[in-house]
Length: 276
Image (tube, rainbow, N blue to C red; front, side, top):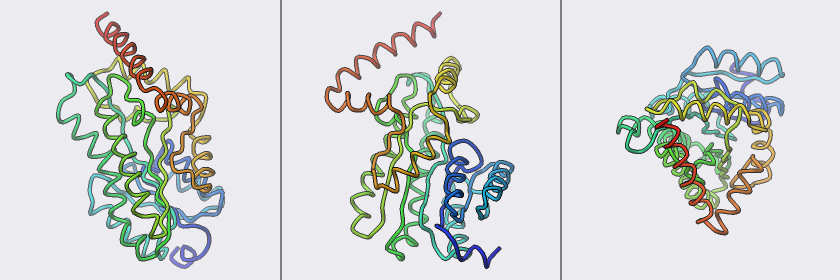
C-alpha cells in the first residue's frame, strides 16, 4: 500500500466520503486516477466507497474521522503526509441537516449544527494548512449550500452554519491565493442524497418537506460531483450547480427584497402547515 500510494495521480482528501455527495466526489476523482483519502464517521460506508474507488481503477485508504475533533483531523493530515507525501485537493464535505423555526430550536441544536457544518470546515482547513503552506500549492474545496445565500425559513441554524462556510471560503480565497493555494466553495440546492439520515430538529414536518424537494431534484449527487470537478479545475470560485440556484442568486444580487418577500411568503405558508 505504502509504495504505490507515493506515486500516481493527484492526492485528494474527502471528508464525509462514506455516502452521498462525498462518495460521488471520491468516485469522480478516482476516474481521473487520483489517490484518495476517505474520511467519515461511518466506517461501513467508507469501506464501500473505497471498494467502488478500486473498481474504477483508483487507489486510496480510509480513516475514521469525526470533524468535530481537531485531533482526529490532525491525525488524518499526518496519515496523508506519511502515506502520500502531501496533498493536492482537500474537500471539506462532511455535513448534517437540521430544521425548525428559531423559537423551537434549542441551543444544543445550534451547537451541534455549527460544530459540524461550520467548525468542521474550519478545523479541516486548519489541520491541513501547515502542509499546504509548506507545499505552496494545493486546492481547498468547501461544500456550502444555497441555504447560505437564500436563508429559507425554518432552518436558521443550518443557514448560519453554511453562510459561515461561504464567508470562511471568501476569506481564505484572498489570504491563500498569494501563497499559491486555490479555494472554491460549492453551494448546491437540494439534490438526491441521504443528508436527511442525519436530520436533527424539532420540526419533523420540515423534514418531510425537504424529503420531497430532494426527491424532485432535477440533478443527482453524481452530476453535482462532476460540476464541482470541472468548475473547480476552471478556477470558478463560487460553484452553483443548480440552474434555479444560479437564477435565484442573480435575482438576490440585483434586488434582495424580492427574495426576502418570497421567503416571508414561504414562512407564512410553513407556519400555516405546522398549525394545521
